[in-house]
Length: 213
Image 1 (spheres, rainbow, N blue to C red):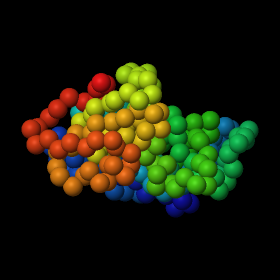
Image 2 (cartoon, helix red, strand yellow):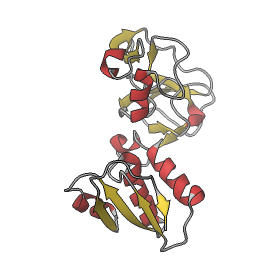
Image 3 (tube, one colour):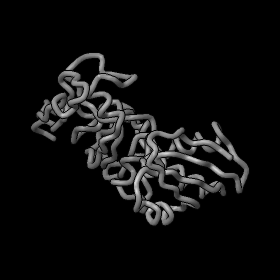
Image 4 (cartoon, rainbow, N blue to C red):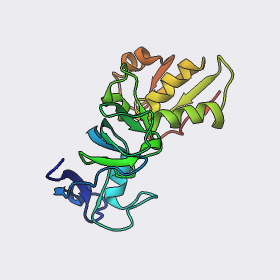
């Protein structure tokens, strides 16, 4: 934006009261992209548990100083490119495969163009905004941490969470079957439609995370 960029930023860590840690403000506009960079208009940025942990000051990686713009995931549209940028053009819809250096709770960012991935037309921006964390976590877990042969079973708790839903979908694609434990009634139809093979309801509190059988 020529007259500045709108941002949400953390001003002080407030454990247990994250809404008191964030302010909405307008900051000076970013400089035009330099060589190898691209400017992006952020359209969607989700609120992840890790973002809440940042506001509370409990996350593993915190800003070096406050106030600081926050937000780990997002997707948007390229508005300008710097010298030497190839494969990305103005108007392309993108998300960052390496994480947004500018953070995403803002309407403008300037990033290393090599960190951006151009989206195919069939992928909505709203979906792309959530591709950086949960789907890769599910894929890495199923392929490398607890790999199973085709037809193997994976059992997971909190199956209606972002990672849980990704586990269901990735496991289905890899030929694995899933037993999915949830904490309330009424989720079986939704998860089955996403590819869950079994859905169980437990009202006994916390259970272990994903396991294989």
